Length: 253
Image (cartoon, rainbow, N blue to C red; front, top):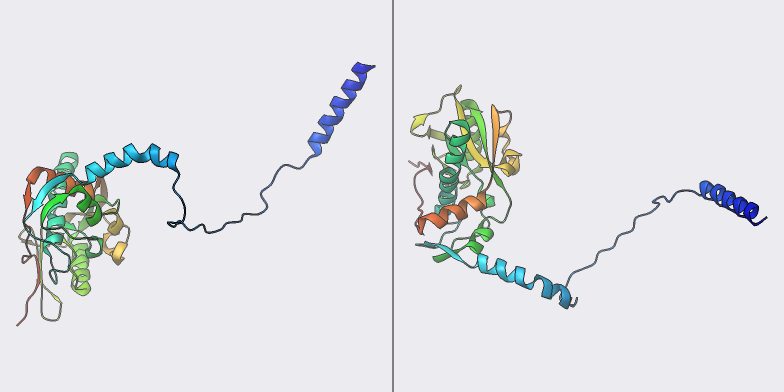
């Protein structure tokens, strides 16, 4: 009798459970929780992260080079010492990688003025300064472009009238900001020749409205962050003294 009752109860529970509706998400509610000084820190969490924080702070405050002067992106009109430094460093660090992988050389570098987020102080340069200068995780990519697309780039630069950092390209504008001369590695630009332009993945993806990177003849992702290139370069040179030069100028009568 007890066994029969047990079997009956078991079958009843199975039938009831099969008829239950599965759980379904019906509503999502969210609220803004402001993080302010009024929120007390969690002592256990603080104690846990302290050794990691101290290690990171020690790395960030380590000196890697010396700057002869103070450098700012507002120092020049069409080219600046800090912008020239960054573009030249990208070429210096990226070209051996690109050449090793492809057997080709980078023809020029283009970065953006807005991507320079801080200054370089006179005196000791710390790793922290490079994180402030380039806080983004932008990577170096090399784009294969025909000469006619380089012409589109030159038109963009002339119309922008900003000190977008360039390297290996020498560009002069007339008094009306029209392109006057443009040379790549000392040669005039040929419309059907393929040129290899190093830039950031941000600009390649239409950042700053730079739409001339597409279509193209090829894209090479070096998987090398611009910030890391700057740090690697500074660790090997000891002292920097970049200057404003004639790579991008306006000729006035």
